[in-house]
Length: 145
Image 1 (tube, helix red, strand yellow):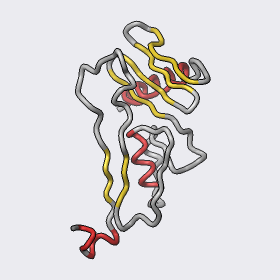
Image 2 (cartoon, helix red, strand yellow):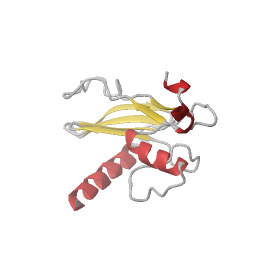
Image 3 (spheres, one colour):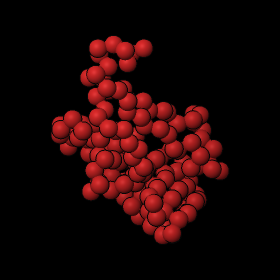
Image 4 (cartoon, one colour):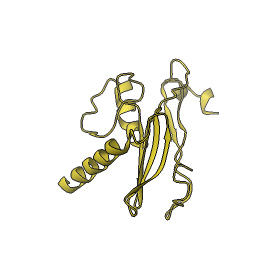
């Protein structure tokens, strides 16, 4: 119905799902529920396409602002998923684990056990140090606020 109104032409709808369930998250299959859709729809979209890159919800800000030609520097951890020069990875964290996924490696690290819980892909443990560093930077940033 909205498509039939004059507002459709300049409207962008941003649809993002939340992850399934709530805490505590079942740690047996920590990658379950980590894939969610991010859909941009509306008359403001010039060409339809599917972007099939690894990303996180934190990347929504930089992606949208970049498409509008606006700076996004203050969103330190956000990256433009439509920029081929951006590193394409997904990152998630829960109180007891973090995960980092790239095309080469899907890694989940159990913080309680201080051990790799899941390590799949062609480059074993490729995301371990990167994931730990990312988590540390998140905590460092939080401590400054």
